Length: 281
Image (cartoon, rainbow, N blue to C red; front, side, top):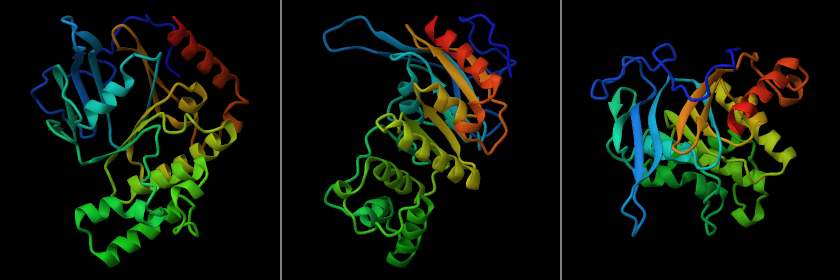
């Protein structure tokens, strides 16, 4: 694993997949790319902008599972929102598969802390919503919805409404609703934070099994270091005030992984403590 004793304040350099600084030239590799990205917000009635993110350079190749960790207010969710095209960076550029993101990015699926299931729709109809909007035919839609529900192990609950599902089942329903339209990239903002520890671990391992099947690109925000180490190929550590990358750690544990297995190793403890030290300091 990469050394954790490097300077806390050094941004990624040319050796860490951020070698190209010309924001107007598309990246050579496909995937999700952030080029010299900064984002400032101006609060109502405040003349001075608040710099949420500064000089972020990060390339995420296709099929890579990347977790963002760091203190609250370090710009992790801001990065996801720019990848989704919900707003533009103040400076720099964000690319999806070498195309600059200038509007809503329809090639990503975005899963947040809230499940946002429509309470008047049953599970089947919630999962089908995006396909209805796209005008997918009824027969094809039914097949794809059934397959997505099966992928998240909710077959038999198609006619249940959100209020009749447990918290973990609603999270899986949200995942099915996202997977059904086959986005290239998944953006996940603390999706399992509200679940209890046992249910969270169950859903994490289910997510990993699904990811192993098609290896979508995933950008995942979490405050849980156990979760980051379990899920990620790479962990990007953010510092705050302003939000910036201070370290990238490659996770070498072989896949498939379970938290119960990797926790037993001294490498897990060393990695966890090193990451915590970076965040704490």
